[in-house]
Length: 296
Image (cartoon, rainbow, N blue to C red):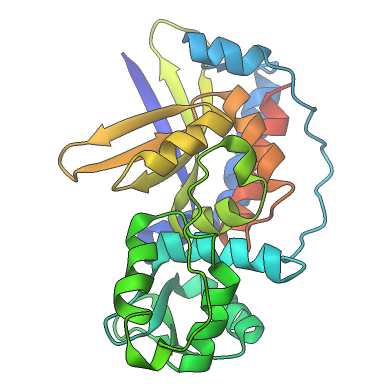
């Protein structure tokens, strides 16, 4: 038996309750550090499965205590991977030949940033919701997006939306594009910004403190969690970071979770190189700080 305290670091969703977590992130990590110091660093970390042992023993470059300078994607190739990940996560191509991407209210500046790079579209507030929509309707804007994300989308659903809702329309019949999906499901094929965009849409960073009755010391768990209807992409992410894939029968969906500090180290190594662009970046920094404080 155990008692657990779960802290969901603001995940960019639209609920007010989620936003409340973001206000207290600094206090949460500060309190964790105080607990650690007062207990003489008396925390333990989950290390129970064979996969965990592999994750913890695999040698990876140590994580620096110094934060890397936050960067935007530097060119069209990098931005195209990020945009494809964002669309795979929270976008869709509608039957009205529009691209629609959903943003939570705290991420409205990201919507305007994407609009400024693409140069087309409008940002609109969703009535009675803590959300905004970035919508591209005109032909020139859609064509620019297609060139940016060509061979970079990874979900069948979004790829087929382009085929069946955009390219089939008569106004795109003269478009000269060899439209393809990224079908490479190998870890080295994610050495780009796609996962940063995908996680800005669909991931959450969590800190969990577990007090087990039969143990004198609390256990700290850091989790990256990603939910999807299909597990194909989650298997790819698991190949990169290690971790666990579960199934929620009530929602008919799958979820990925990083399982231990070995997985967390790999997550940090990726996101220190390919930066999140949404408000989740601040959540990630708190999560990263917790890792540094308690992995010593």
